[in-house]
Image 1 (tube, one colour):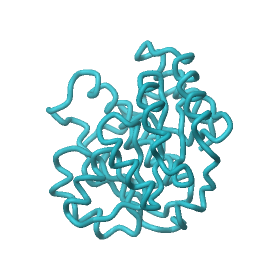
Image 2 (image 1 turned 60 degrees about the horizontal axis):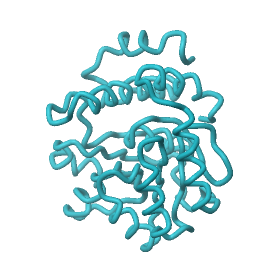
Image 3 (image 1 turned 135 degrees about the vertical axis):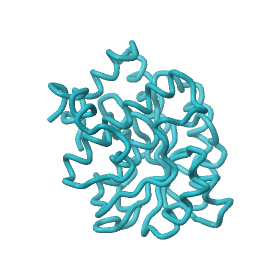
Length: 232
């Protein structure tokens, strides 16, 4: 996924939430000033592998075996801590620095890649935490147009950004432990973001010609309709 393909979805998200593109661009530029280029081969070779994209919903504790059995584990935010507590090492972490940035910083110092995301609401965290990361293991990302070392592979929330990253580097099969689009423990804003995550995963599912089990409880026709005229 390149930004040109993702941009229509990005613009639809901005319009739906009333977010400003300029704020995302400012955050991106702050991240760019604190980042160095990250060659994607540092992620390792995920081509043809089963990649577990681990979400941080409470059900992750019941889905640990799905992550443990995968070839590659990409953890969204706090999922990294839940998996570590259960003896499952992660191969990459995707975070916008809002829950456990200390875990992300530690992982980079241990040589584990972290995709650190800058958006309009987290500039203070970007300024505080990116300098604490080991730069050679930090992949800075944005939801705006990419600039310099800051990349955009598609996606909106930590979890679906992890899925788009895995797709970009050639993952063979995606599985989704720890996902719950109807998590009753989240607030209204997070619930709306999860609905967008479902739409974007449906788009990715179609692009890949794959069927994601995590979407089996959703109405795929409804998800398609929500993106009709926005993406191909």
